[in-house]
Length: 405
Figure 1: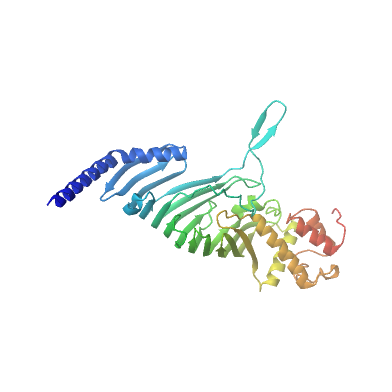
Figure 2: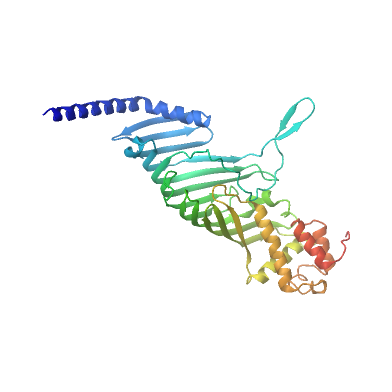
């Protein structure tokens, strides 16, 4: 009898404590969450409404982190046993209509003189390239979090990159549908399956592109296997990235569409991404009949014909990117390097000699290139800056000094 009384008292005490805790959450959870987010982000945070549904499920309406993120609805279903062990553990996370802004800003340039140190915004930076990750301190501890199921519906990402050499890149990834399971920083054997679908608005009036990503990852062991596809890429949008080695105006390129796909495989943080880039459509600006064809146009035609001759009439570029899973990096320098390699491959396949320039590719004469000297001048004069590697290749191949026309 006494044992039952003790058990009863314990149950009553637990119920009372839980009720008090529940009331506290009802009254203070909204302010507590706002404070945590504001302190962590350094930005003003607002929540229109927060409700707690038994046992401890949270419904958050109209969360906004000023200038960075907002969502119309967030549902959080915690795992109580894991929470009692001090882990941030959630069975379900549902986020509706999230909007995120991500902006890359070039680092400031520090100028130091005898009297002061002055910081100036950096005007130009090189296109990002693959770099080795910085050493990670052994003392760093990963924040413990477990999410069994995370879904994002109707998301939107504003991407702004101000680090490009010749201007900013602005695109909108919208209609984001994202799903991932078993996201964990605690269990190193947890395998997460993920699926992402979205549309990409180029802000140019061109039809939206389409983005697909599917696969699995073990974030503890840093293993990954995934397939990425991006269809109907508006290549003109990314012109600030490659403006130093292609002149669209002189080449009279008005529109260009690309498809991109990549098979991604990573083991122990070492990732190899086998990439496939294909030009599917290009529109040239109309040239008045009385205006002669510029060297840039002739060289562009020659390069395109060379690519088509090696790929059954298609303009294709295949390359492999080597990077790290915890610090993924990709830059247009990778594409430029692969492009120059393709030029060299074409030269080797054709056994190209100076006297062969009128025969390969077949449309050189039709494009208006009458001799090897014309093609050399087209490169050396910089009508199309396709990069020093290509320039040197043509100079070595033709072995003819450039002259002014």
